[in-house]
Image (cartoon, rainbow, N blue to C red):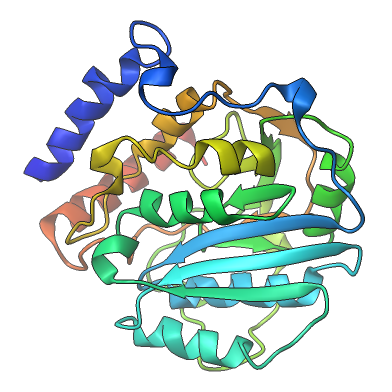
Length: 297
């Protein structure tokens, strides 16, 4: 808890001043002007970057959606950071690694659990190394359902944006731990098809967390908070992702909403990536449930 508090204070006291009191150039390179961004070629190259720690039951939906719904019109690289300690995730990867496609490249990235739990470390590595026209920093509980990746191609092909994000998504209600959707067996493939009737449309109001689609030129030039030391430091447990706010300040862009269809997400009360059964996990679960009930969704 003390470390989380120090990160919160760092975010409030240092990151909040970037771009206002403190120049961006003190913390990293200037992002390229939008007018100079490279246009996508044929086929458009897209990279999806996700992290998975004890979320194999959610990752199973994502991997199946990527495998089934990546169109021939794009060249997709799917990058996943994971720890071999997470055996369920490793087993799921082993299955999908046997599935080959000319337009889909699996890019598995095994790393130490202490690096995995600080998400900015993997995101920075992928940002600097990507060869894609667009790189989507996602979470492993997103489902790229029918026409999602195709609409991403159609929407961004002619756009010159530093940062885009989906204008909307389809979400479930906040599911309790016993819900059947949360109990798929990652070892059984293919996974059950999601029931669209359990999802409803929901607007996304800003680029955050899993909804940051970055132009490749910006990613390669700026990385993902590479010079903010606290965000590149390994940690013993999964940390809140304060670095996302800093990243958007460093690229001088809060994102433009774009129309992308077929993006689904299963919402759930318990977050497996946090220390299961801990007091913090229980408190966070109660807070999420209370907030959703207050908002009425």
